[in-house]
Length: 117
Image 1: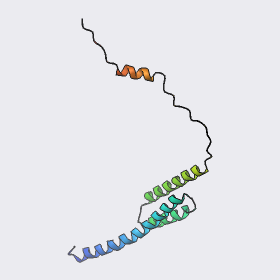
Image 2: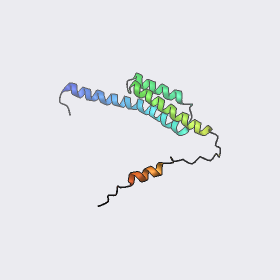
Image 3: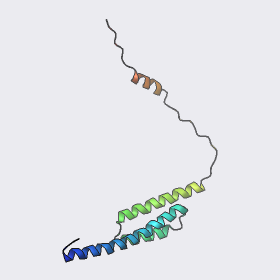
Image 4: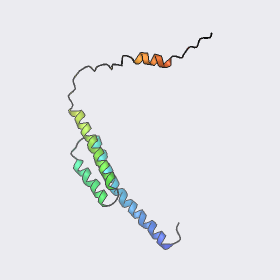
């Protein structure tokens, strides 16, 4: 524990600030979690609003906010595309290896034979 009065005060202040910051973080994290579970883009504007308010309160940085927004948007787009994708039974083509691949491997693994005279 700190002995100096100003240090005691700063400890009190940081505890209060940490609590306030934690509340802001949990709000947008819960919104993101719920959006991932439901896979719908309806709440995207709410998520953006909460993230922007966290930036204004200086809980997270601008770059982190942009990164979070981008990731959640990509995820939701991907999930919606998979839902709406029409599945057709087209067989996949087998992968074709290069013609000389086997011979190249054999050449590389061969050891040179030395003959005694």
